[in-house]
Length: 464
Image (tube, rainbow, N blue to C red):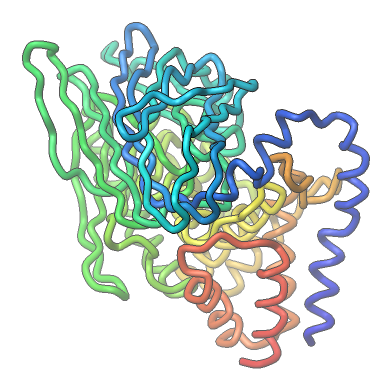
């Protein structure tokens, strides 16, 4: 059985090395600096961020600081920090002293005058400002979306998967390293607006002279860079308590004021999602940070503990059934799919963007598991089979390593159907469920590779 499962993985992922060779001539040094674990990244381990910013909707600017706490693994004098133009890294301060910065495109190399002590914990404060890139087609072509709601009030959100968090704030922008101790996100906005970010709201400061409010959100768990978000608007709040596998889970919903009544009905899919996914995948991975569903001016994304939603309060994907089975109109696609990423993307996270299928293949598959949990096995199977029509077989679903390149969009339907096929090979539903739950337990809050996932599933299919 193990060999059959390995064969399925190889069949789906075959020829990605050929694709890498074909694409190699189009790659640049900036691609390497962005996508590889450079020497200037490898010597320090990220521990904590405090992102402290002021967002000015009328000017479409962001200005602030990011305090980076890190541990020295191997004493070096040169640190890479990433921030994409037109944002500017103005200065870097450590121990009260300004440090020299060498700018090379979107990579910024900070020079230390002395070698830091190996094993020591250090902090550096990064000052930055500018007009971040405007999202052209969020969430696929991301950045910051600067919209207005129906009442003419600012409606703003970030989205940056693939493009990277460094499109709007300075950070160690590689997926292999997450802040082990979480982060604080402090966002100052005009007093008539609210910011909703990741984690739990710990306090709100008001500056009457500036006519602003600053919202402080605390994240306890490790978080991937692109999962960090800001959502700014005329929000109102309501919520639920979910009796989950680890106790009471706070489920908080933030929607535009005039959408409150429709959201109270439509967001019932969030509880149904928790019921299905805790059954299949194990406990929600971020009880400490709560679960939030936040309305945004774009379709939606999987920001950790701050899932964003813009599907127009309708079932399906913008009202359509991507499976053509009929089952896709029984639920709101964005709520289910983006919430599924809390397990596959935010709990289990790819180390390299080439392995993005780990996020999208498993989460595509989670849709049919949601259908199965609520409407039965035949319904779930019909749904996943129906998604096969979206497979293009245009190129490998594994991208090019070390240059921040993902593979084909087939990672969604082809990845989901591969997992459905492996389930038939295992031919034991309880064993299959234990493998899915085991992945989330054994790789809890970790970054992983395709090889690790393949080996784990192949071995567990035989042993369990």
